[in-house]
Length: 115
Figure 1: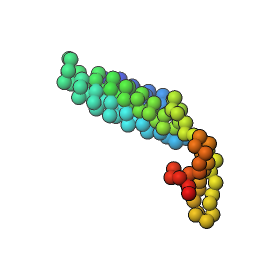
Figure 2: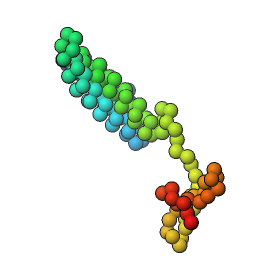
Figure 3: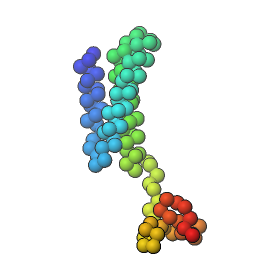
Figure 4: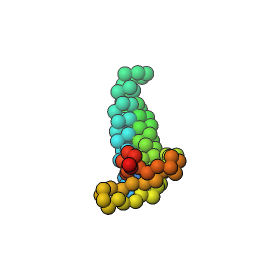
């Protein structure tokens, strides 16, 4: 049973692929670990009391959820991208600001109105 658990965990990590930020891999690995632990506890306490099967299922589900979370953090997998806006530098204030076309007003980089 341990060999199949290791194979499932390895396949889950390899299927995460490579990204430039590492968010997908990091979250997939973390999700697999947390899922395996939770699955082992649940599997041991319910049904036939098989912690190994519960850990395997938990690792697969947790790894998948973690990979999707990492992909969304990178702006993929259906995440809504942040609006792009041109920023200008105010030399007197030493800060950046931008123009919001919807309101017709100028705002500092942190979102406060520029007065």
